[in-house]
Length: 271
DNA sequence: CTCTACCCCTGTCTGC
DNA sequence: TGCAGACAGGGGTAGA
Image (tube, rainbow, N blue to C red):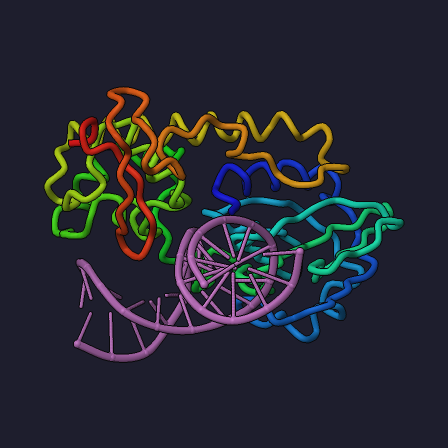
């Protein structure tokens, strides 16, 4: 499941291969993703130059003069740079072939991802316009979170996973950050103090930076990369470890469900 | 506005 | 060992 660090790693990995390159050919092998892929995408993109590759939340934005390709990796998607000899496999749904002979290949076995086109200012797109701040920006801080939480009764974990509040905090990092900050994920968001939010903000930024740094170590081999180690390279303290002893206090980690998402926490350390 | 339930899909895991 | 069924998971959306 690509989380923000994996998406950022992907952006950094593909950027140098495709920026300023001309699209020669687009192949769509399966257009039914989260939303259908634009039917004329081949025609629209042919001979178009990539001006930049950026990211907003977990959306990868491939910008051109004519418009922007918006890609979301969903939970099983990946984007890789391959050469023209690399045979497409079962779930490789889109290829963008460039004049430098490299191919940007989109794979998404579970098809929760998206591959969209817009010719309007991309930040006004309905998927992006209501998004909250990036977690690594300065505007994401304790004051902001406390203010946002004022009228919110939802569990604090659900709250920080709400993309209108802050983007890019997936299930894994939400659980990990709450553990590090010592906050019980079930608590109503409005009852968490500013002091506690300050701790949470630090934890979120720390864990995301750390994960991006780890992801970055694979950049050099991105062309041949067979997958994304991403958070697998991180030492996870609670996610996927229910029933195991807490590494702080040895008490059994508990598994609960919040907002239809599995949530692991330590009932002793997280108050 | 806030919140919950549901849906899209398939690889992996569990139980028989 | 094989098969069926349960489950996970991002995030948009309908409806309460």
